[in-house]
Image 1 (cartoon, rainbow, N blue to C red):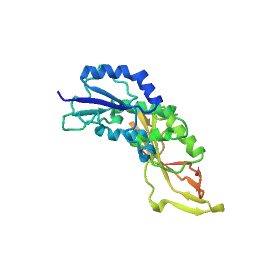
Image 2: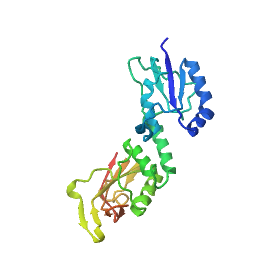
Image 3: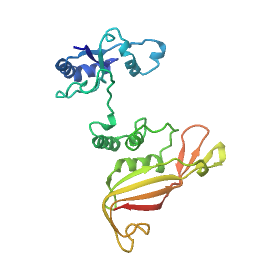
Image 4: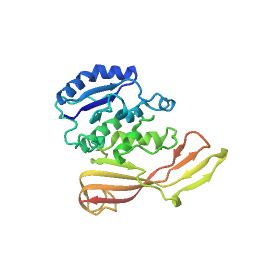
Length: 274
C-alpha cells in the first residue's frame, strides 16, 4: 500500500492550541480510518532571514522536502483550522496517483451555497479595513480580491454607499423585487477621464462610473409606461436591468487618502427579460 500522509502547519501557540483543542481528535480519527500518517509542523522548515520576513504560510511550499515527509508517495496538505467531516471519504478518492488534486473553495460545497456564505459575510463585514465589505463583494462579483488602490476617506460615495450596497445585496427593493447591484462594473476609457489642477497641489480627477442594477422576479410594465419609465415596453418580465451612469470626481492629494464626491445617478438604459 502506498505510504500517504496528511500534513498541516501550526506555528505559534495560538495556532497550535487551537488545533490541539478543536481539531486533533477529529483529524486523528479521520487519518486512522483512511490509513494516513498525520504530521503537524510546529517549527519553520526554513529559518532564513527571508523566511522570517514572510508569512509562515509560505512554509507549506517546502513540505515535500521535509526529511520526515520526503519518503511518502502521496502527501495531502490541509489548513490547520479545518474540521473534517467524520463521514467524509478519503480525500484521495478520485485523484489518480500521477495527478495533483485541488479544491476550488468558491465552488464548494456548491457555487450557490458559496454565494450565500459570501452574502452573509458581506452583511456582517466592517465598513473599512483589510477585509471590509468591498473586499468580500469583489469575491462575490468577480471571484477575486479587489485591486489595490489608495484608500478613500469615509463619505457618501465611498463607505456609506458601499455599505448600503453590500448590506442589501439581493434583498427586496422599494419596488418589491430583489435587487443586485454592481458598482464600477467596467473600465473607463482614457478619453473619458478628466484631470484638473486645483489649489494646494491637489488634483481633481473626474470620470464616468457605471452601475448595473438587476431586479429579479415577475415584474409588469403598464401600458402608459409609468411604472418603469419610457424605455421599457409594456408587458411581463422575469427580470429588469437598469444601466446607471454616475459622474464622480476624486480629489487627489500628493499623498494620503482620496476624497470622492459628486456621483448622483442617471438611468441611461432600461431593459427587461421576458
